Length: 104
Image 1 (cartoon, helix red, strand yellow):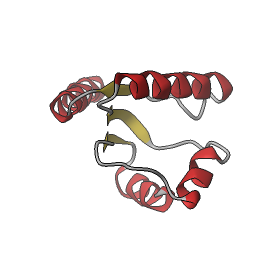
Image 2 (tube, one colour):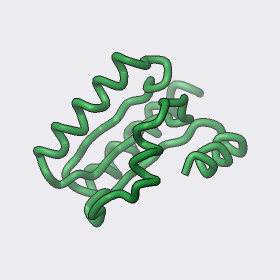
Image 3 (cartoon, one colour):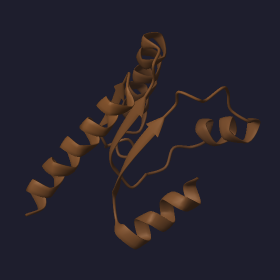
Image 4 (cartoon, one colour):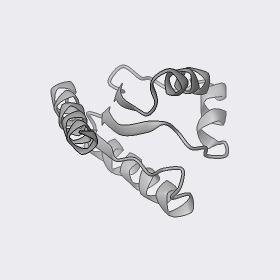
């Protein structure tokens, strides 16, 4: 995944990411190792994550907050945790519009 992020960053610069976790049933040992490794700077402008469970949204929110406290220079992008795919698209659309307004 990091290689894909790097390729997109080289080709286009920072980007918006929408993550839909509704079908996720677990993570491989390799994925868990990547998630728990040393944080690096990612080329995200904004992330919207679809998480149907309110409990999981709360847990993920706490993880992001802790990550920002530990490595603020590497987690310096907004993250929206939402319950529906429509809400995620709306958040990304608003973030794109705001970003476009700021650059024009």
